[in-house]
Amino acid sequence: MADDAGPQSLCAREPRVPAERLVAEMVPPPRFDSVRFDTYEPDPAQPSQSEAVTVLSGFAGGLGGAHASGAGKRRWFAKKPAAPAGPRGVYLDGGYGVGKTHLLASLWHATPAEPALKAFGTFVELTNLVGALGFQQTVQTLGGHRLLCIDEFELDDPGDTVLVSSLLSRLVEQGVALAATSNTLPGKLGEGRFAAADFLREIQGLSAHFRPLRIDGQDYRHRGLPEAPAPFSDEQVTKAAYATPGASLDDFPGLLEHLARVHPSRYGALTDGIAAVCLTDVGPVPDQSTALRLVVLADRLYDREVPVLASGVPFDKLFSEDMLAGGYRKKYFRAISRLTALARDAKPLVSQ
Image 1 (tube, rainbow, N blue to C red):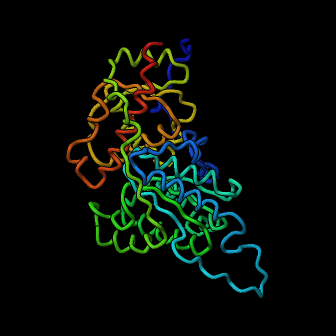
Image 2: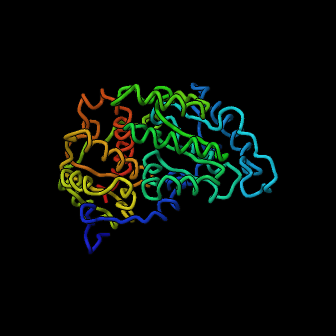
Image 3: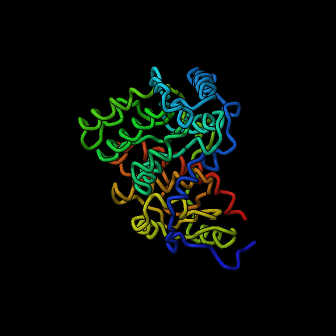
C-alpha cells in the first residue's frame, strides 16, 4: 500500500537528543534485544566460539550478589573492600561477523542485576555520554553499575584514549565489571593510527583490566549466503520508497553532506521511526571523515534492523583501496558487511 504522504527524508531531520535519553538508551539495541547465550550458534569448526559461551556464562553468574564495591552498604567504620583480584573484565577479540555483539548482549541479559544497574553501548556512544554529562557525572552515573558493556571498542584519537582510560579506571575502582568487543587485541588497538606510541602507552594500562577472549570464525552474515544483491535503478528505488510506509528517500551525496551537520551521537535519533532507507546515486565516499560518519550511520541502521535499498555502486565499492588498507580498515569492512546484510533485507521491497 502506498503512503499518501510519500517517503520521508533523512536530510530534513535535525534531531535533538537530551542527555537523559543517552543514558536511558544504554541497553542492547533492538536487533539484540532477544538474543541469549542459548540462541548463539557456535561454528563446530571453531571451538573458541563454544568456549566463549562457557566463559561468559560463568562471568555473568559471578556478577550476582552485592556490588563489588559495597557502595551504599558500608558503615562509616567498615573497612574499605579490597580491589578485585585479577582482571575485572572480558575482552572479546575477533573479526567482524563472528557474533561478538550477540555474545556481549547475551552477557548483559544474563547478568543477574536490574537493567538500571547494567549499561550497554558502543565506544562512540560512551564518549558521547561523557560529552553530554561531563566526566565526573558520568563516573557518578555508571559507578553504581554491576556491568558496563562496550561494543566496537575503538580508539580513534589520543583524546578519546585518555578519556576512556581514565573513565574505565575510575569505574573499576568502584567495582564495575567491564566487557568489550573489538576486532583487535587490547595491546594492538593503536596500530596504524595517528600517534601509535601515545596510543600504546595508554592502552597497556587499559588492557590490564581485561581478560582477552579470542573468537575465531568467518563472518556469519556471509556464511552460506549469496553475494550482496546488485544495486537497483533510481526508478526502482524511488518507486519502492513511495510504496513502503515509513520509508525514507534521499540522494546519497546529499545525505553525506547532511551527516556532516548532525553529531554522530544523534544518528540513532535520525533514524527514529524509519521503516526502510532508500538511497539513490550511491557512489564512493570522498574522504575519510565522511567515511567514518557513514560507518556510524551503518551501525545505527544495523542495530535497528532498518533495510537499505540503493542504486549506484555496490556497497563493497564505497571505500577506496587506500581506506581499506589504512588504520580504519576494520571499521570500513564492518560497515560493508552490515550494509550488505541490510541490502539483502531490502530486496523484497522492490517487488511490492
